[in-house]
Length: 363
Image 1 (cartoon, rainbow, N blue to C red):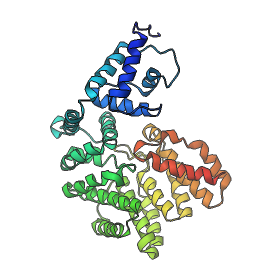
Image 2: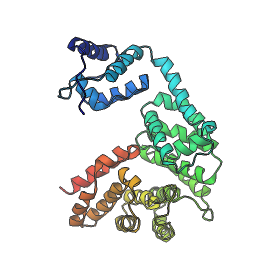
Image 3: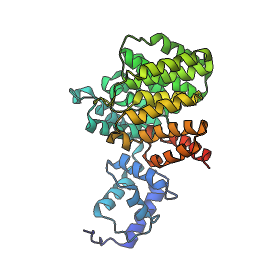
Image 4: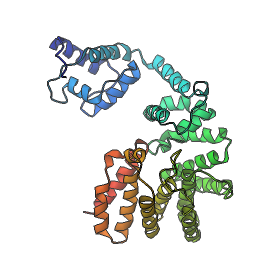
């Protein structure tokens, strides 16, 4: 049922608009800024107003819009608090994040708990938008088992890794006691140095990863994929004579990876996913086509990884390999399987660039 118009005057609405623009602490100059304002309102008030509601309220989106009482109340609360929010809110937000990951609150939480993972995504999105907040909480999170498990291990974020998130992984390595955790974090730090083009630190971290790895110790497919991703990229830069041996080993190991096993993301071909990235960077196109094809055919596609866009991203690797091998018609067919809007937030722009390169190659 449509909401009845509220008897709020046009003057009051205009006054609120002006106050948001003049007194609020989020700059609003165009429709694109409405998303930032929605996030800022949420930070300041603890209440949510959608981006589309803000667009309609501020006149960036045409409609016969009648704001609800709740919308007006939240906007007034934002105006009131925003100018005085900075220092107090920063401390409160810091405490919110730390208390969220306080082990005392979640004694028996399972890492595969989908509901808690969803809440953790909200925290990860908050931290990626606020470097100052991240730098305040990164060490306590790294010292916390919950913080390491439910933030660092779940959300290595390509968009912020080189800018500031790597500092947290350095703290993670200092505090993590498990072999698998240390291997994982060092691979992430290798990737940071690779993104930066820092060859000396890439080499140092690669050598550390090699020394850390133990074939006899079973580890999660995602971590194993990260390990071989590191080896492939490093071999291309530092030890090309070993690249062929590494690829041969990958295809032997691949056959041992669980197919459609349930629990803790093992439904998805995570090993293949990360190795494909490494194969792309070293121009191993035939191997990339072979491995991505196995990932897309041998594993059932599950809802979680569909909405995260991970299968779309595997199709990107598959299509890029097809193009490099001259199979243009097959690559064009794959385009129907790829929806960039679904790319997961922690690697969205990374894969948007790959997707743009793919489309450019098909023009």
